[in-house]
Image 1 (cartoon, helix red, strand yellow):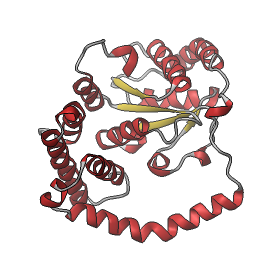
Image 2: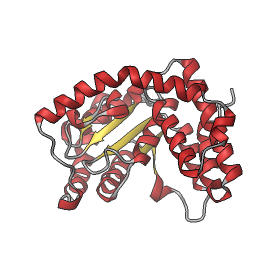
Image 3: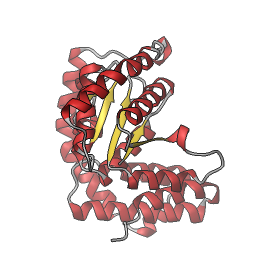
Image 4: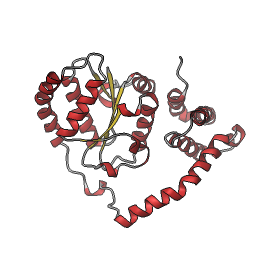
Length: 267
């Protein structure tokens, strides 16, 4: 079985590297993919990454306080959720609590980066194996390899002051929740507007507007769309990426990666 490990920023990378080491020693028949260690220099990374996302049966997203809003984390989590059922995508929280997770990442059941969370993660992976380990073998393997994983987690440096996210007061959090409720109707209207925008309107956009438009389409994919809306949004992304490639050749690689990621899979 293949597992895709998503990460962003240096501290998350250490957690992801530890996870890869731990998982592949815990389960001899599991391959854990982590982008930087597994993509060879000079390789067509976009196609490779897309192939790994499509070929993975389980996804783990390494979250730290400083990468919660990173576009790459959100992109890979969205790609994983389209190819893997939600109960097989696990945010692994380092120095975070479940309440810290917002937006599209909050749809997944998260686990803490500690012994209890790691044991639950091991049990979840084991349940999805073609030939799962017996309870006793899993426990023996877990107790053998957890201390080595714990050493790696403890090696993660402290968060630099400049990288620390702002601490919001309770009042600000309440206002954010209320604002989210007020904006729900507006979000639905925005989805309709994006879905119905025609090709001629898209072609009139300048580079920055076109890139922003594509980002809006991608972000809306994780907002509870109907199957028909999802297909329409993906079609718009592919159309917009083709226009981006046609009008701005310097963004060809980015456009091609988007096309590959959202092109319908062959049955």
